[in-house]
Length: 279
Image 1 (cartoon, rainbow, N blue to C red):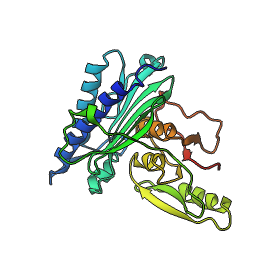
Image 2: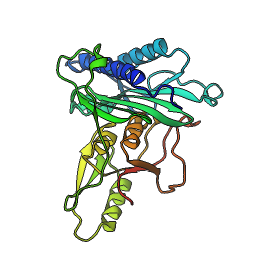
Image 3: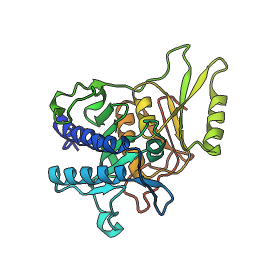
């Protein structure tokens, strides 16, 4: 499907992500930030809600015929969405724990899903001012957004193509681990992975928050990202898109033949691994 994978559409979504990032930063600067705990025990802040409202509103204005699933909006009932071929999937603030602890490693995630797979993804880290984006046709890109840049100049974005790639000879394999969700299962997988390396192959662990894990791999700064703990579809879709359009691949774990798809009855993802290595 070539529609909605062009530069014009990507620019529009980039603009929305940048503006949502500005909204989040306006809350981030406040010293008194109220935190609520949702039914699933995950935290939510006023920044999540404000960014969610803005993104959904903008998508509905620009693309009125495409439905939206967003983390902080009511989920459409399964009979309504089960036959959706095309829809937006949004996490307005991925890495709320990173937001709360003020380490800057949180992102705005916007993805377009077609036939249960991502065809466009945008990830923006407002504090780091890093924008990652891509489509199945164009590939993946990164830009460092200059301080003070208005989100209204999306046509002037100076996007640099990024490519996932294995380490050069003699360089360590970089394994990405979640900053907030590293569990014994992931640690055991990393230990088994290290056993498969050649005897003289060195490795390093890189702890990263939010969808930046996908993006670091997509830009060639890491090589394997195992995720053996629960995630939701909106957590992964945009980063998934950017990683695979940069040349990485994603497979379910432990059953690699299990399709990793979106718009399931239950929006909880299974375990997965993203890699540029043949493992």
